[in-house]
Image 1 (cartoon, helix red, strand yellow):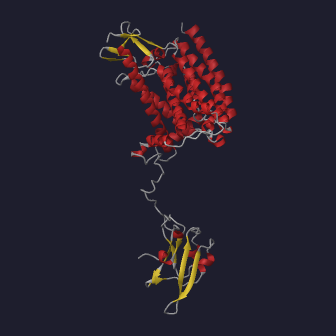
Image 2 (cartoon, one colour; image 1 turned 30 degrees about the horizontal axis):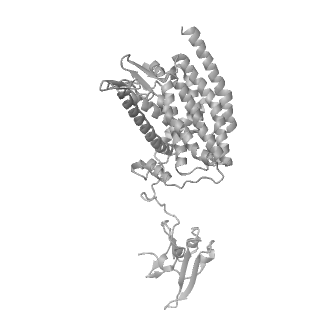
Length: 132
Length: 349
């Protein structure tokens, strides 16, 4: 009866000298691993979004958070006139990235998505465009 | 210097007030920083950091907590018994502090030719070169320790809440069960010391002849029973969060809650000081450092032990607690008292 009690005490005291796993978050930054599914970004090619408004991403989206409206540009090419993601509904599953046939949407390592109002969580095309 | 007030020199009164102030402030500071130490130690034992933000490594955390509790809203439940509800925290807090009156925390010190014993309720006869202290010191400590439970029971009853009442009742039952075993464990100590004066008990343990070595069983049982008496893990049933919300202090807020909190930690310090005095040689230690240093070091070690135990063991179930108290500790201490009596009567003489 006594030995298990002493063993328990040994375990706790040995843990006291281990390096704590705590991350002092705002000052220490987490090491975000590749493949992390954070905020979406729309890829750019030849100064415009790659997206061809094929509707595969809103179709596959399980949370139904993507709104796409197609438009026609000067070259009579189909493009996304409106591309919005509602971040309050998004579950960050990454199916949109998998579904995209033209590599137009990707996910970044950005995970700090707090905002002050509900409207701010609707990410429009301008906000999603890859910053270069 | 030679003026006498009630037959005692003025220096006696000055020394008394100084001792009370120093001891009280020291205990209060230790209470404040025991909360910090507990959070830090348990944090590191759980591979966490504990408080880090308020001050360097969170050193100002107890002050921040105190200020926060001070400015919180006082809530008195509408159906509570008001007077008892207000008085209960004081009843819990005061006995926790006044036990320190009889604990010797150092050797005699001489200031300007006047010798002062480092024990609050003590008097040094300058002519006879002898210390007089409360000759029933141990009894006084036992009495104060059992007074503390009144605060908890009163709080539980006055809150008019089922959880509080259950917490208070548990505390009372636990106190009665463990007080007996703790008392019997102490009996075997003063069967050897042949005195209830704490000064004499400490003096007997000079030169490393600690009662912890002579009475190892009594030492272990007394320490465990003390943990149960002050409601610390693994015996913190009166405030078992999982089933009783917060036990007797469920309905308390603001400074009244802080008083219970302080009482809990002050009790822990008192119990550690009593254990040090009775079993670990009090302030005696290697002579290169003063006596009060050894006293504080031993008390702090025992406080660390309490926290270490808290970080290790889960809480006892209520029936297990009662069984341990009545069926294990009580018979063991009785046997210990018998064996000690036999030894004192027939072998040592």
